[in-house]
Image (cartoon, rainbow, N blue to C red; front, side, top):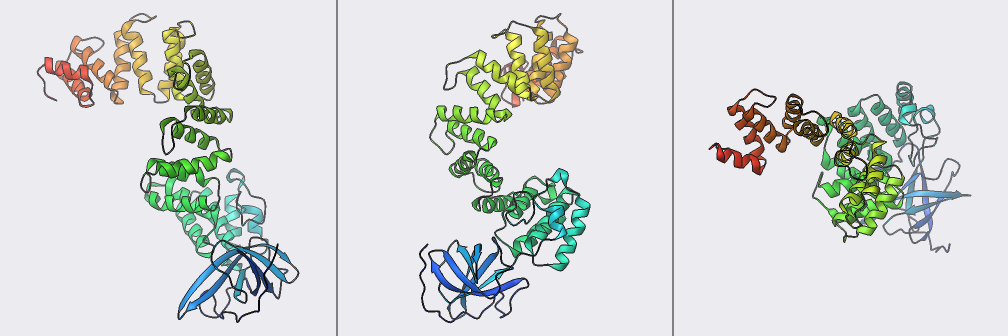
Length: 448
């Protein structure tokens, strides 16, 4: 790499607190060569400097105006450290301050965070973390090195595992005060603000931190910021930006992002519609065992969306999703066996799948069970059972089931005849736009 050497100019004698004193755990040096965004820094002691150590340079712009440039050590050689700076104009002769990472500590052994670029030990997964011991070690490390960002981040993660999210937020914020471009601290802090207890949630803050983390290349943040942009959480809806983040994450093999990007292509969310690309992404995501992608493939072939309609292929994908206990797949398989699509009609199998879906909260499945017993489809007609299942679906808000409850109350089928109660259920359905209920209310001269 070609370097440009020029005459050393007077260093700007100013610290980052503008007090003239170095921070703890810092080494001062001077830029002796520059090439684009790369600086060669002469230092008196090179042994303590390591890859990833942050570097700051403060330039005087005139009067009391200053510009702070931030970089990172990429490697060291005899007497000099090489640093990359993301932006800003560097000058030979400027003073540079390198913040030295604290040495290896027991905290690193007990609580290093996976995917932490500032970690000095192999990361420990949450489920393998001895959180109590980690907290104690981290606090001891912070006493010795209060300005080391990784110890605060490690303490934050340990407190999260102990289900102390407020304490974790405080430590992550402290880590970011020390090192603003700390990807895992940004991501973890955003996660608490997004998924944490209601009193700690703040979607605007979460979106800001996920965005910063993703822009620093932290892979886990990309699908989340993509979803927040797509859904308008924590800010305006931005389908185009959401699709860009999904694409970046999908290219790294993230199954959810491949699925989400497929939806963008299928629905034209921030991208031109491309059903073939959507199918490719759904298939790739499904091959990684992402269940919603399997389900979408089943629906695509069942409905003939962008492909020739094919119930056999649809059935295969629904069966595969059902192996992972997917609720919608259970429901769809119930309709296949009820209607005899591809498979022989088998009401027993249909009821089995509808029951599985119902037990996981699928409202339509409850209604389908009711219909089978109401109409006597392959079973003995039983109004009592039908009424019980219609009522479960109606109470969950299903308008068709609400109408059916009204009918059964009017006729006294499985329920005691009660015209007033029937009208109440018709009204519930009518308010949701159920036309049969609206017509029946008109016939009964009832206002809803």
